[in-house]
Amino acid sequence: MGRTASLGVAAGVSRPEPSVGVPIDLTSGSGRAVLWGIASEDLNVNLVSWSSGEGVDEHTNTARDVLVIVTSGQLAITIDDHRHALASQECIIIPKGSKRVLRAGNDGVRYLTVHWRRPPMTVDPPQR
Image 1 (tube, one colour):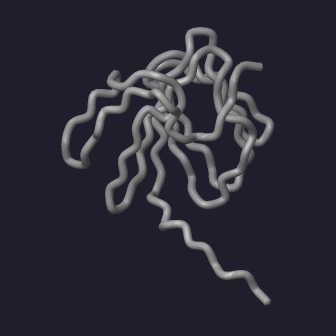
Image 2 (cartoon, rainbow, N blue to C red):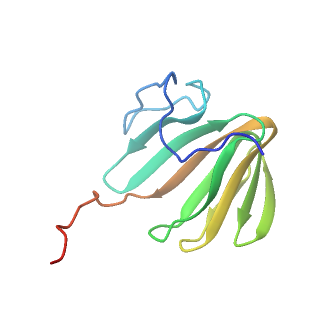
Image 3 (cartoon, rainbow, N blue to C red):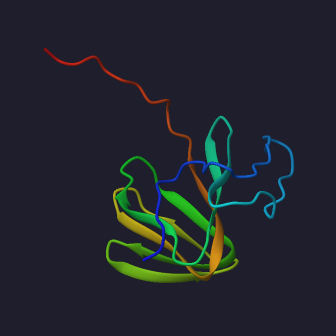
């Protein structure tokens, strides 16, 4: 398999600064992993790019359904052991609570993820 990572902005990535209410060029940005992310009061959107064989290892998101929209290239996505091949201009909704693996095809991939905005993380003090 190729390189894998958790979804986080990679070092050395050229990131445009998208703004809510302003058109965003989906071909902008370069690098790998999350190229940019934007949040409104209700939504989170991320533009993600991977080279051939790279992607996101198996994980489960129990908080939100996620819409994945392939803007270029190909994406192999496995949801609860069911493999799907998505091409440019195709999308899929990943249900919350499902196991998922995302892997770029031979020509790499660029895709958007869209989901309801998550509340800020909090850290509870240890229980004694």
